[in-house]
Image 1 (cartoon, rainbow, N blue to C red):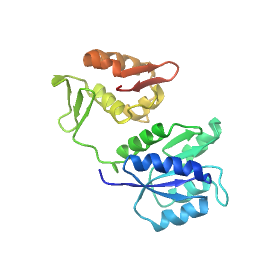
Image 2 (tube, rainbow, N blue to C red):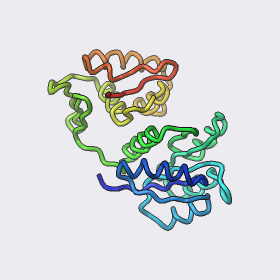
Image 3 (cartoon, rainbow, N blue to C red):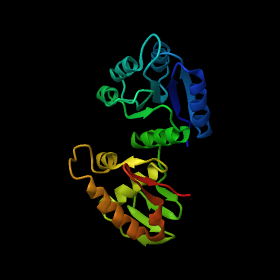
Image 4 (cartoon, rainbow, N blue to C red):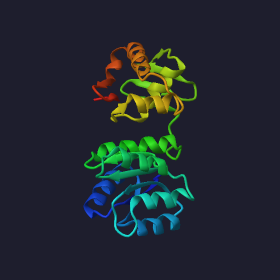
Length: 225
């Protein structure tokens, strides 16, 4: 994997170091900014930045203004990192064009998983043609799935759902998020359709179906122990 560069923007030096250390362990380069003004200076002077992780409450220029300015010129993926948890704050961030919203405190491992998932969706992080996890392999070009070397026939949506679980391994996914990503953002159907597809997918994967865990009150998590 090529080393992609991520800009981490937060006025807390300890948090920046924590995030930087975890990202570097996963083969990312990291540049830091302690406030919004510095973040914009770095972003517009360094054309190799592929993702921005940005706090909201910062001195000089807040995170919303940073996102607004970046979005005037770039569609680089942005994760907003904040202690706020009100729905209105989240909606404001999404209205400005952020890709993900993570509230503090957070798990660094989950943050890295979100970063990798977003970069895959943006195609900055290139996927192998064949993905393999826990005895399940997905051939993206052939649209083929094998379990312990034996081919399993999946419908188009079952294949897309399994692929989405693969690239979000370890992340708790709500039914609404799965609908938005697998069935596209303009889908307004019943979230329970997810349960039906998950049930069929689990059955076709046999024992490996246990990797798809139900997270009560939320949705599902694909996790290989």
